[in-house]
Amino acid sequence: MSYDATPRETLACQLAGAVADALRQDLVQQERALLVVSGGSTPVPFFRALAASDLPWSRIDVTLADERWVPEEDPDSNARLVREHLLQGPAAAANFVGLTTADPTPEQGVAEVAERLEGLAWPASLVILGMGGDGHTASLFPDSRELDLALSTGDPLVAVRTPSQPQARITLSADRLHQARRHLLHITGGDKRAVLGRALAGDDMRELPIRAFLSCPLAVYWAP
Ligand SMILES: O=C1O[C@H](COP(=O)(O)O)[C@@H](O)[C@H](O)[C@H]1O
Image (cartoon, rainbow, N blue to C red; front, side):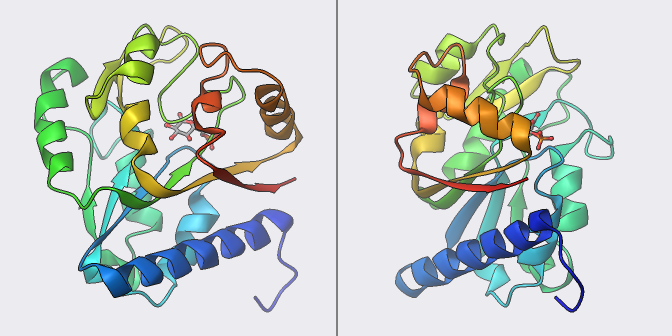
């Protein structure tokens, strides 16, 4: 970078470097590699930095940890975020596997999305998690009605209804999110650092669902 990068930009570049190295390493041994990314606002600079990485993108599958059940054009769509910020330039050659269908509800679409996911190269090379201020990760929210199911099922995906959230969602289950060689947590800001500190001090996953991943092991990428 030729200007004074902010701590968040520097973090995004460090994370992109680590992810690119891991993908290259796995692609020496296997034909395809799978990258699971999160949505929300935090990953945007990371997506841009990773898109600029020199990688054999046509051998990389990208999917999401979770998605809002909205059309891809919707401003809240995680797929839109990935397409606009990650799948750009040479990275557009990656194979993106979204988590929505044309069905009106995630309960109706979940089987079709599960079939798509089964065609991918599990275990994933990396799962990059985000975290909300309530300790949710992917769409495992403390108040999701299906939280117990999502934490315990062997199915890859769960349709979730969450009173605190405006849209229905679909999320990879904890079991499926665990199926990766490396787990990274990308968070920014003092508030999230404090939530992570609380999570590390206890063990109730229903209170702070990020706890389901703290012993993966989980590499934490944090900046103020
Ligand atoms: O709703 C979501 O939130 C979390 C965190 O998002 P952020 O905007 O605070 O970065 C994200 O990890 C998850 O994938 C997303 O659907």
